[in-house]
Length: 205
Image (cartoon, rainbow, N blue to C red; front, side):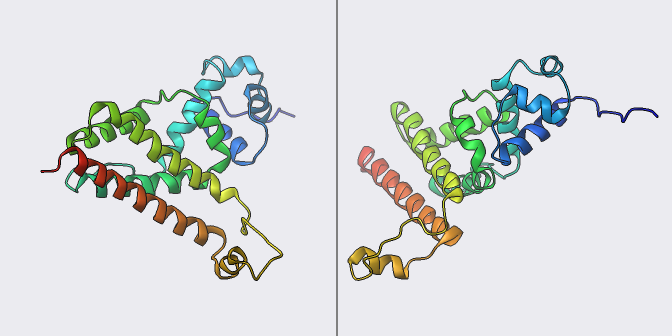
């Protein structure tokens, strides 16, 4: 009887299986991925240079799931708000990937192009060059944090003291994804409001 044919390795298949492995919550590495693909690790190295290269393929795939295009016809803060809502939604679908993404230098061409355009939007809005990258990092951290928040338990806090101010707040609080979405909405609104105020301080006119 002929042996079952193993599908030929390709960057697309490697990315598919790498993302599936990461999303499962299992340990991720070249050896683990090779076992999942039923190949030797050396076979992977004919397509990728190593673990970091695979993570960048996964980053490219994840980012491609959402519409991160910056609408330059909108005011800068509205364009950024739309993009970072989409970014949070992408991260929320893959919370197990986030720790891997933040440990890796971003080199994926499409992802770098997105951040480059974001920098242009902020520069055109009037932010000084020295503040643009920190602003991007702050926005990114908020989206990453709330993407990871999707893996949190439905009830983040619990107290036996229902009569305390905190206990009363918890009794009326939303839970799960509704809680997380509302908190992100508020956080992004506050951050963009602070950035608009900052821009006004830089250029009172």
